[in-house]
Structures are given as C-alpha cells and as structure tokens.
Length: 301
Ligand SMILES: *Cc1c(COP(=O)(O)O)cnc(C)c1O
Image (cartoon, rainbow, N blue to C red; front, side, top):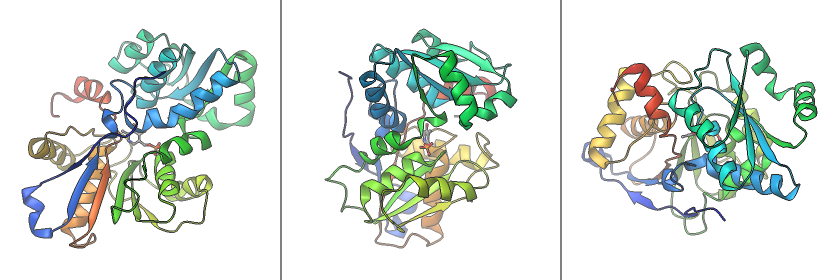
C-alpha cells in the first residue's frame, strides 16, 4: 500500500559540549518515515485514511495555515491512497504559490482559502455540518490531524523494543495529539516531556488529557520554550538548530523540533534532567517548512 518505514531508526548522539553532564541522548528519526509525508503527520493520518476508505468516502477535507506540515502531508497521503483532498486554508491572503501550497496543489489538493474569522470556526459543530453538507463525499479531519484515530497512530511510535529503554521521551507539541499518543503507547512507563511550540499551554493540558486511554501522570508540558509564540523565532533558537546540524548532521525545523531540542539541551545544562538519564528525542519531521521559512527570513538555517 504505502511506501513507509514503520520503525525508523534511533540514533545515539554525541554532543561534545554536553559530555560533562553524562546524559545519554538519542533521537528517533520519524522524519525519515516517508519522503514527503514526514514524521508525526503520517502517523496521525494513517488510521484516518483507512477509515475514509472503509466508509467509501471519495476524499478527505482538512484545515491548516499557509505553511502547514499537516496540509502538505495530507495532500501527499491522500494522493497515494487515491483519495481526493480539499484543504481549507487560513487567510484569504495566503499565497497559493508558496512552496507548501504549491506542493499540495501538485498532489491534487483543492485549496479553499477562507477568512481568519471563518477559519476560527473550524471546530464548531455547526460549521462542520455546513461543510459536510457542501462536501458530502469528504471525510473531515481536524486541524493538525488530531483526533482519537490520530492519537492511536501516534502511539505506534512507541514500538515494543523501545518501551523500556529510556527515562525520558521528549516531543514537540502543537495540538498535543502526538504527545498523547506517546503517553498512551508508553502505558505509564518513562516520563514524557512535551515542549509547547506556542504561547500559553493551559488548554493543552486538558486537550492531551482528553486523548489519554488511561490515568497516566508520567508527563509534563514545558511552556517556556516557545520563543515568542507559534512560528516565532529568536537568534538563540536559530543558533541551536545550526549547531545541532553541525554536530550531528541532523536538520531540525524552527517551528517544532528546534524548540524541543533547545529545551532538552537547556534542561540538561540546568540539571533538571539528571546525569545518568537516558533521553529519547522524537524528530517529528516538519522539514518541508524550511523552504518557505528561508523565502521569508533568508538563509539563516
Ligand atoms: C505538527 C507537528 C508537531 C506537533 O504535533 P501535535 O500532534 O499537533 O502536537 C510536532 N512536530 C512537527 C514537525 C509537526 O509538524
């Protein structure tokens, strides 16, 4: 069916500047799961697409911003499964020729740009009813792909061989669906550190809680590494991403994984992650966004 590597490799990292802290740091390369449907987005789409097929929908309809990793992945995944796709895009001013939306269109996605006011209704029951009436043959997937089927897909990142190996799992958070999946997959083992990529994470706690399949308390959300808010960046973040690339050869993205890695390294330096600990960072992908980022901010990454 789909050409994917369901259990991408884990790499042990050697960062000379951190050696004195004696923390064992590894990274799970979910970014390598598929050439264009990268990282957690593939995991989150998988069972949703199966469901859409099973229920004989002609296609999927979903939501995202002009540079959305989810829109990019949804367009490619739908095409591979012979499903049509519609993307409801935030902002009438969105540039359909930016690299993300151009790719989505090349995969056959039909773009429907809506005002920011209309976009805000994306989770309202009434609005979803209207969309279903307008596009009855389309299976609706929420923004960022986060629903219970997505969380089930994300839980499969925790393969059996990894369950008992790490003291910490570190993951970037947007909607929290991926973190919830990892918490469910670990079934109370290890400790999950979720790094919010956006400002103000109070609602995230509740959202994640709502996706959990057990009463797990082995997780926390760090809200102090958002660098000004969603899709905002600062020079320290850019430096961290570039240093990490120079030391490991691994590219991070500035929206999610860069902030997570910055946070982990900072917690190690501050002693919040103790020496002797084994930490697994999840590389959730998102590298498609780099081209659009460079077009806006120059080649600083
Ligand atoms: C979407 C995304 C996330 C956040 O995933 P959620 O399930 O929404 O929390 C993290 N990393 C990358 C690269 C993403 O594209």
